[in-house]
Length: 250
Ligand SMILES: [Zn+2]
Image 1 (tube, rainbow, N blue to C red):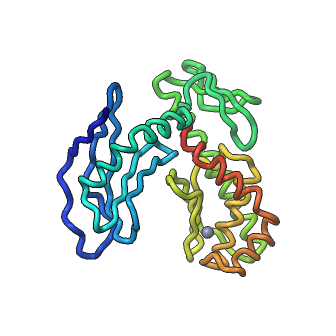
Image 2: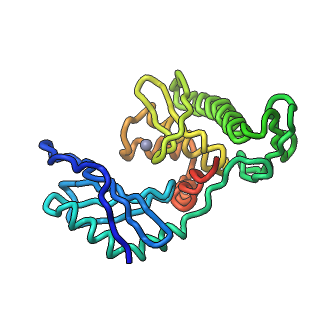
Image 3: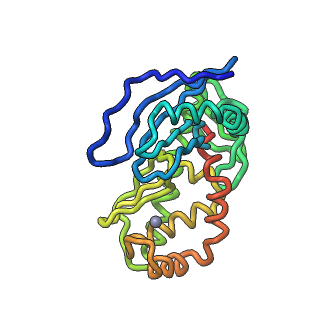
């Protein structure tokens, strides 16, 4: 048996008809409590329950004509399905000593060297100094710095081929996109791209640089991507199949 307890106050109906959070509810089962965010989407046709594979967040969406209570009853009936989905999520992989991950297509292992200088890559060993409590943060800082260097250089080289200029590269950690481009030549990328194979990183660079010429996803945009990168199907397929796993690291 499971029960759903609504925790936060309910939201008012939104006059603009936009999506909005109505309640955060706890789905209580023996030995497990799952937080469910209830959102109303006026354009939704039916109640939907989904699990975000990047962080295991559970979202319940209800159409305009369905009450929060009705939505929560639906979630309660689906508790078994939900439990299975949550159990199937990949384990998170913290950047601790001994952790292994792919860095620019090469397997590396984290080694903690107490008191030993700046973070450095030594063959396939990533040596991290300082206090053990800060190893994960130092690994992430190292990867972000590497991501900036690699993505800036590749973006500039790629842009030059179509006569465009990259003004700046920003490194961030967005949940749902790998990069973005602004009219003024500023590009933004997820640092997690250095955890992906290089052919995938190169595709994202070509994609964002192509946006400097075409700020849309029309045929001329894709022709520019092909000119810069070639056939991008394998890279897109890789991101679709493995992209969310990159969010389990660190
Ligand atoms: Zn795009």
